[in-house]
Image 1 (tube, one colour):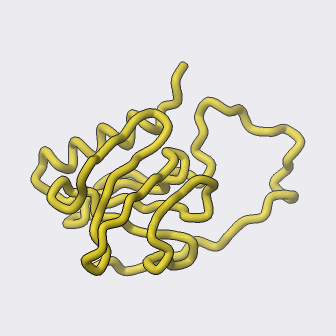
Image 2 (cartoon, one colour):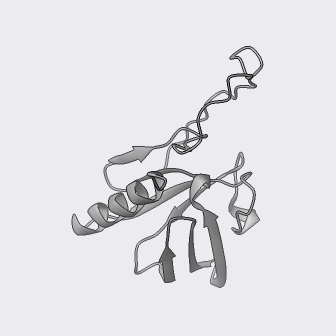
Length: 129
């Protein structure tokens, strides 16, 4: 089967827009292949407004999301591999979905990696206004 995550991201984005709200993406900028303006990255994360009025050339397929957006008046081209998306949600009420950092439903867990061997990061929460 094809991976589930791109379908979830696509449908949530559409659902948020249909309800007249602003779709945001939370992106793991440490993920290989992510291209975003580094000046706006904090703790290896960036929150992006993906409302059609804020972006141009929106493209979302099963592999990645790409679009252009303005940051401090300067146009930037962004590229986000779908597995770098940590959450998609509505700015106004926070409704949406968070994904596990390793949400790769088509890859079975590695039996050689025990929980003791995994390096875990403490979650970081921020107030978004």
